[in-house]
Image 1 (tube, one colour):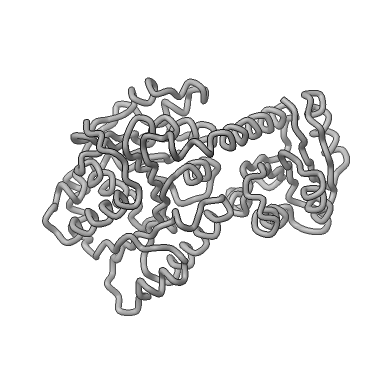
Image 2 (cartoon, one colour; image 1 turned 180 degrees about the vertical axis):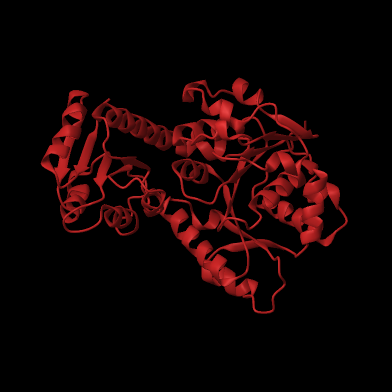
Length: 388
């Protein structure tokens, strides 16, 4: 493999430590020791990938990443952050800025070579497949993500998938979470297989056959890929694994509803960039609206079109001090698919019964709202009916 890699670090020893093994593998390397120099060389040298240190003498490397995405508008340039900061908050900040990967020091040079090769190969596949993806895909990928935790994303995902399946569309509900997944409880089942078993496989081994073996039937036309159920199953999802999963699933079903965790990750980035629609689940109160605005900004940095971002409001309190729908749409710049009315008792009873709201309480107002939201999704992204 060949390509040009820009390495940004203020330590000469680190520059050579990373550059030498890359050059031995056939890469051309360019170096920079400041943020200003890095931005100049990104524009003049046009590298295929950037390895960015965080601690630079003139600025923060994360700020450089942010400028690359927002000012230079280079949304598909692969960027790997290399940092001595191991805290989760630092990793989240780097990914939110638009980095594709976050590697902590000390790093084995051989590992960095492998990461560079994998990132470039993945970027090349995405670029080559992008023109044909929309026309060749049989199914539609709908990704649901919360503006913050605890807003009801999983409940919305479960009922959205149920409603779509009720319209005679073959549907897969995929719980793409690295930690404990609760969708199984919404349907009253104990999964015999989960996503974790797929994550143990090499990416090329994540095939239709392997995925099908882990799908749990829920009702006619609806299957579940459940998230981990035990601590021993917790595994981070790599971007390449996420690509392989959703790439296979959209060829197996008319609709795939992906239930995502709200924290930024390379897996979320891969899924959201592949999705035809991203549904942000939120509440109409100030802190959640601010979180939703930050999420929209992140999605734009990840090259998710604003037109693909939709909102679902979960109104738990019926407070008279909440902002209006029109105000929220204007502030976020996104269309609202619908508002799920306050019905805490209905939601709790449904979970306790192990049935989604649409099955447990089909005649309620909240069930009607959820069906309307599903119908809007289907109208915006129709596919031919493939029941079964």
